[in-house]
Length: 141
Image (cartoon, rainbow, N blue to C red):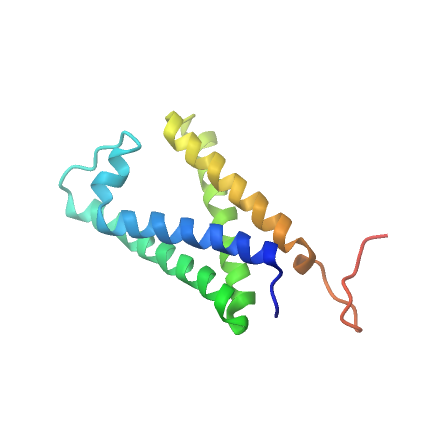
């Protein structure tokens, strides 16, 4: 599947963001969370529980970026970008409902995640519609 320039830009932004955040948490969880005003302490169990999904986030970021360079990976890269950047804000919104409004820095992360989700939805919207037997996108009537 050949990606448009806009799709490549969206995957690039999503990929760099996911890789950067995942790598930062993986390598320096205390510093990352301190930037949100969260103190982790020295609990190795907690740090392990934070590093594990961070490694997944970084790996998804690599996959998103790989889709820009390898045409065979572009479809799975799009799915990864949409999954990550729709799931993260969804999880934060559940947290707001269940726990209340978090700090401004956490809400700022939510805004950025929503912006990237919107960018991805806009960039990949034509790929989200079903195809007819002739390979054309089906549009609602």
